[in-house]
Length: 290
Image 1 (cartoon, helix red, strand yellow):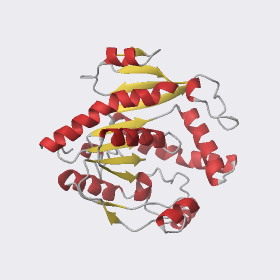
Image 2: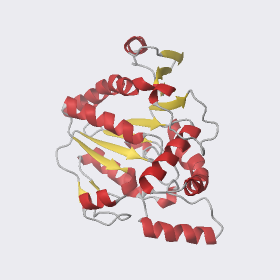
Image 3: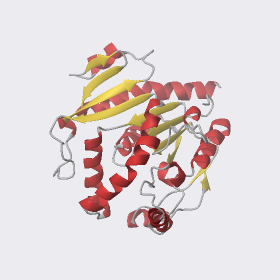
Image 4: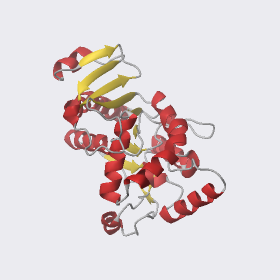
């Protein structure tokens, strides 16, 4: 952690909704005049698309059906830890982009399924913002969680997470339901052992819970809307959180535990604005004083 060069880390699996959280943070940064550097978890994958396909085939041939992008060994976690540490110490670092599709290929000048070159961060940023799979990892090799000043988990109940992933991958990547199901099954081991443990390290978790039937996510025709959902917000350390203020500002919200509040799904953006705006202001204020 670094008072002079703070780091915000948003962690969630594929289909969890971390991109929505990033959009809200971008709005806060723009409104509050906060200069920030954004890095994506996909930039720290170890393999490009072709190499990952070859590695998967090799692992399957060797009897390993659990290897996936969620796995520690499929990612450059030591590099991510180095980027966090370097930024915290000096406010500098480097990142790259993983090119997902033709639109991004045109934007970044690299083929889909490949990485751009590593490039240094812009100078003079107020903070570093990470969004991806492994922003709060603690294992025998790395302790990324210790280097982030604010860690946020985005964790829909798992059937909803699967529905969101199925619909996204079918719509944007042309996958069949069967293909997405295969990916979900392959990732399950690493989801349990690599993704879930991070949510004990996060400072705040957002868990979206649908209030419609999602019993069979593989045949769901629609993603439950925000108005068909509740969101459970859990604070690891509730000290300093003004719960009466939050429940008064967010209509139809209520507390379920001393560190948890439940809100209507449609109020998620409002809740994040209310919770994170003062936190970001405090991080930036302390960084300028350091």
